[in-house]
Amino acid sequence: MIKVKLFDHEHEKDLEKDMNHFLERIEEKKLLDIKYNVAAVQEDEDEQIYCFSAMVIYRA
Image 1: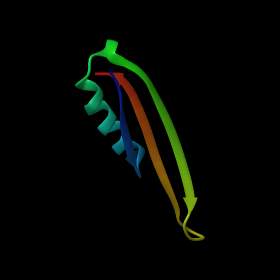
Image 2: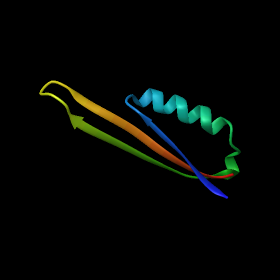
Image 3: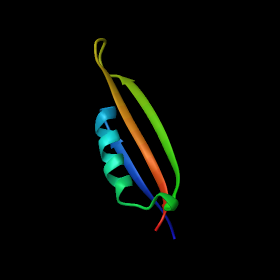
């Protein structure tokens, strides 16, 4: 069975930490793909919000 695990964080280091923790728990041969995305939204004139997200595709 193929599954996905979604991650979404405002800071890239939080995303990295979460993903590494998850990837430690699955066998490397079961990892199929990782999709990564960054989105930025201008909130105010001085503030920009970032969204770092990833999807891990793996075999269960």
